[in-house]
Each structure stands twice: as structure tokens, then as C-alpha cells.
Length: 262
Ligand code: PEP
Image 1 (cartoon, protein in one colour):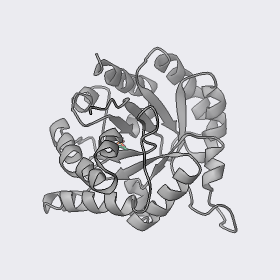
Image 2 (image 1 turned 90 degrees about the vertical axis):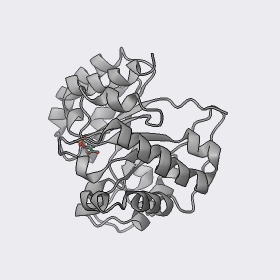
Image 3 (image 1 turned 120 degrees about the vertical axis):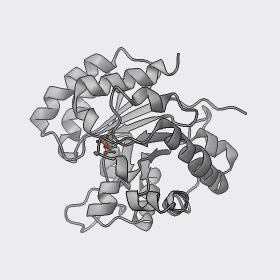
């Protein structure tokens, strides 16, 4: 049975934009994105701007995501933010981004705890995976991807709902392409999704779920190269860092996703 996956474009603002700066950017995004149909749009500002951005997105079809959470329900965890706190504001949460793995010691095991905690409160995790340059050059892409998917998603149950949607998104983000201006080719990224990510999902959850999970590409996506990824059979959108901070660029990327449906 063939499945239809709605394209999704998510903007990861990383540690950029104060509340005041977010209030300048979001109205431009709303104006440009409201005219683009058929694509799910998500913006993921820093925690401090979530409330302000949520208010500005009221009445639009743009969804909100956070960039991290802690897996415990509540407690003496100074500086951390619980799944329920995020779920009060957001529909999505980015988990296991390579910057968190590199600078904040996140592992497949901690990512797994976060994924489980997010699903428990009804958040849709955008789980980031991807090999480093050294791993790529040593021919380890397949084993890294397999390990990250298997360990990151271990012990979770996934079922398509009545409309066929699965509450999980994977972002394939080769670390060497993030913030470097050197995007992977569409053909390479599609091969990783088709030959490594979906087969591992199929092994874990069965064929139907593997076909239904949306898999994004991330790594130096811009308005002028986005179509190369959206034209691929197994890539369902993009996780966008730098280019999501500029309204014109992000709108251009979302439009490219919409055009790929035509
Ligand atoms: C990201 O932060 O997930 C990302 C892909 O960044 P960039 O688009 O800037 O490479």
C-alpha cells in the first residue's frame, strides 16, 4: 500500500533571536507562509521566545517546536525544562541535534529517554541523526545511522493513526553539512534515507510505519538548493538552521516544498 507523507519544513533557530528580534521576524514569516499550502511548517525558537512566538502564531497554520527537553516529569533539576512544560506550548520538539551531542554530551541513550518522554506527553519528536565527516570518510555512515535509529528509538511503540500519520519525524543531518554551506547532494541524502533509515525503521516497527514516518534532510538547506532535496522520493522536507533566521529564505524553502507536490 502506498502512503502519502505531508512535507514538513522546520526552522531551528538554535541560540539566535531575543524576544524582541523574534517579534520582528515572525510577522514576516506569517505573511509569507500563510499563502503556502500543502506543507506543514514548524518554527523552533529558543525557550525564552516560545510564549511570544506562540501568541504571534495564533490563528495561523504554523506550528511551534522546542529545541530540547529533559526526560524527567518534574523535580529538582535546576535549569531543565520538562516534557509537560514544552507540551503546554509546542507540538514538536527537536531531539538529539548534533550540536547537543557534540557540546552537551548527549548520547543515543539520553536521546532515547527524551524521545520516550516526548511521546508520552503527545509531543512529536524530530529526532536528529547523522554521521560526522570522519565517519563518512571511513565508510561508517550505514553503521552510524543504523545505531542512532535503533538506539534512539529503542522500546517505543509507533502506530499510524486513522489518517496514516505516525507521531515521529526523523531528520537526517550529516554533521559535515550543518552550518558549513556544504550540503549533501539530494541523491546521496535520498540513498541514506532509502537504504539505511527506512530499512532500520522497518526492522523496528514494520513496513507500514517505516513508510509513514517523515524523514527530513538537514544541512545547509537554502532557498536555492531546497528543490534538489524535495524532488527525492524518500525525503519529506527539511530541518533548516541558518536559513530559517531569514524570512525570505525560509519562505523560499517552504515554497520549494509546496512546488515539489505539483
Ligand atoms: C540545523 O541546525 O539543524 C541545520 C541543518 O543547520 P544549517 O541549516 O544552518 O546547516
